[in-house]
Length: 166
Image (cartoon, rainbow, N blue to C red; front, side):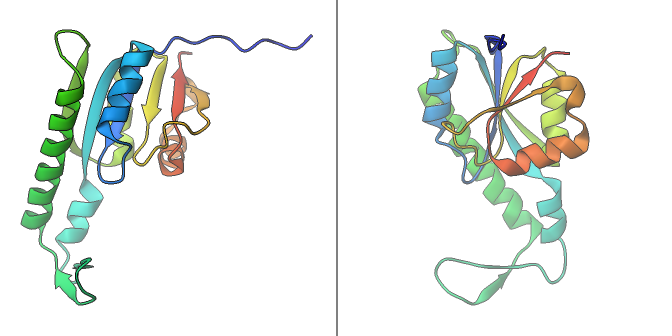
């Protein structure tokens, strides 16, 4: 006899927010629909900042093909501006008096920031990696199977991940 899928109630959504993420309004709607606490996690990627500090770091902007020098201060300003815009968008979509949500800015690698966020709460949790498509098929994994290498791989897939308890 085939096993029936077990119904899982998601208690917390950890949404990695940044450029290219699903709209904050859609993420807020998902949290409301699932009646789950939302943690909006904006990660200032230490690898990006380390790259910006290199003497040859450059970017090519949308207005031209000429490379421009990148410096850490301008990258930090851009990250702060993006984080504030995302926090404001979530705040306009969620009332803190009516729904539990927080927004956090952390400077770390994406995997270590997500690992820390997962360790703060008991699963089941829904993890929305950077660039996750909200309607994509969700993968499911037990917390004990989520070692650092597996977590990095899942973050790169841009698919929602349901993290179950042991």
